Amino acid sequence: MSDVFHSLQTTYLHIEKWQRLNKKIVAGFTTKKAGVSDGSYSSLNVGFHVDDLSKNVLLNRERIARHVQFPLENWVCGEQVHQTNIHFVQPSDKGKGAKNYHSAIKGVDGLITNHSNIMLTAFFADCVPLYFYDPVTSFIGIAHAGWKGTVHQMAKHMVQKLQRYGVEIENLLVTVGPCISKMCYEVDAHVVKQIPTIFKANVVDTKAGNRYFLDLKQLNVDILLQAGVLRNNIDVTNYCTYRDETLFFSHRRDHGKTGRMLGFIGFLPWLHEGRE
Image: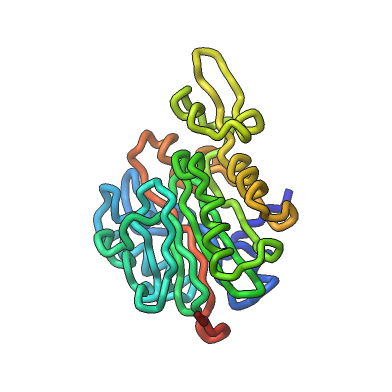
């Protein structure tokens, strides 16, 4: 079955459907292949916040920058604290978090902008990447949603933030990217209790011993639908970061000692002009 993410390079998958709509857009998700990191981080780890050599992380990021035609100086990274804060990215934010972790935008898990020549980024190793694109206003966004961000409805917060900037809900496109899949994601009652009741029956399967399987992809879809996003405007990948071991790092599969993939979205500067 065809997936919303397609392989262009060994190093990343891209959202081909959006690129067909607008050749200016660059949006995708990196693999763990063709980098320079060793051991548990082999080989395309892009996370500075794990126990990898910073020089290797920087080399890996520079490789991706060349492949997607976005220099590191134009990347913007959030701190990612498993909350629901969102930052509107301006040109003055370019480069924040791109070459080190400490300069990332503090306290945010979501980024939006309508400026070109900026690549919004987030980092993943089982958590859910959420991509947003409005072809009418040229607003784009990316969000990091682990189980905490998901149950606190990061997806809804992103939609509402974009609406406050003039995005009409019927125009908003959303893609749910590679993350851990339901049958690989076992959780306990502590997690399940925090899922809003309206969504619980559709996303949780009970197993013996007070354990459960949680479908993070479907939970994010259901939250998006309740927020008003049209079902035909939501795409969901079939990729699983846990199961697809040759492609992706997985925090759970790799027992916490692992690298990170990059989710990214931006407009090429020579084809699009950002505006307030």
